[in-house]
Length: 484
Image 1 (cartoon, rainbow, N blue to C red):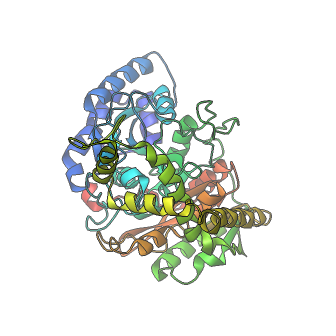
Image 2: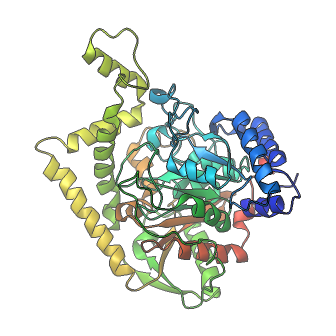
Image 3: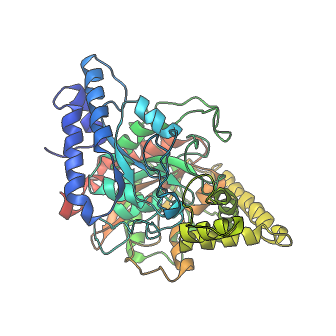
């Protein structure tokens, strides 16, 4: 069977060229044969998938036109899914069977999607390389000795290798966009509040946002149509109508003003990544866009501000994992203190412990004003930079990451170098803006991603720009040779 995109499979299903069961069996077979090379899935759910595929075929036979009907997808293992292990990549939740379903999963199920399984991820979404997972690192399908990015590395690798047409991810500081860039796929982080966080296990509540990951902008638009919308169960969800994100994919780029922040093209940017990004920008200019140099003067402060705010929120959110109600519980605790101490020491990995300790420190008496409060003030300055920039331009563009995928273990001993791989993405989360990464070229056969940043709730414009770029190029259609 010839591989296709999510949109392509949708057309073939509606034309009755293929059944959802046949399509589901095809992808389950690819996972079974090929995922041992990648470790991109934590759990595969063939029985549930085939039952959902049979139900989809019945709906298709009745003329049902639900947008994702019969289409196979994967869910990042951060979304609670009733009756299925939801581990968040951690030993702490290795035995946790979710008693309810996240809104994102509910909405995709209602749209007819067929879940094949749950994808691997950095533990509690804390990481930029997918090396912190309790279940072992995910490998990049373009080079198995390199990382796929993180924390949504399992979803990115599975989509890049076409083990699944599309998958969900979450983005706290770049965790959709950076792995999308490293694996040569398209991924979008929506505006904060656009997609419900209910049932999405929390890392940093003011930063986390769910979004789609797929080969193309068109596929991401299809998924976002199903995922987005107000949810009364999520207090951070924005009550705003959901537009059809596929409707604007054909929008003309003539007159579009694209801002190029000088801070994104300075020291630390790999020359090959710069060249690929500039070549991609030239394509947009040829399509009629105007390129304008701008400045985001406080963007250099985004990494230190983020690594105060995010750990502070994670230390609070992860306090619930105490060995009492659910999750990992140590053997034969001597008393309550021993239960808490050993359950958390055994259940959490090194990176999670590091961030909990940082977060607890910056929130402690005597340090709150010096660190946490100051970081929140810097966050406002970063948001103000973007607000001024969008007074001059419609979209901001630049490299997604300053480098191509690095080797497994290369940065494990140096957390600061690891954190800097997200230097161009973090500011977008601090400001709550939408951001998209799309394949823009290669350097030595390794993918390069270009990031597009939009104003609040301007996801449709970002998807339209990416789609127009993908009409002129084929980077998004290329696959790792070992998985063709």
